Length: 120
Image (tube, rainbow, N blue to C red; front, top):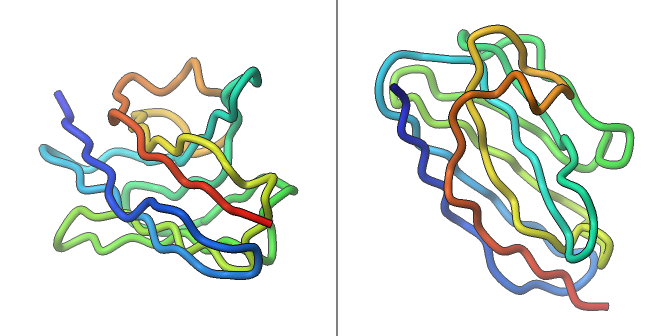
């Protein structure tokens, strides 16, 4: 069992930065960040392995977002720079034993989600 808690969301202006954190209890799993905007399906944003290697990004955030992991604290960080209004969504972290990439059906554990709003 893994318990995930996100923090760091909020309201910012276009071009600003935000730093999301996901604290995971229990043993280390691969972790992905997902987001869901109103009236849209949940989509993959970024993922990282249980050891903090091989970061993987959706094309829409590549070059603007950076995922990292503090293995000692089992905390996964999503640094979001150059934010755009289309980044507005509820962001959730999720844990998986088998992937850190797109397939959300392979993630067994999910955090409660946190709102990120980017104004233009």
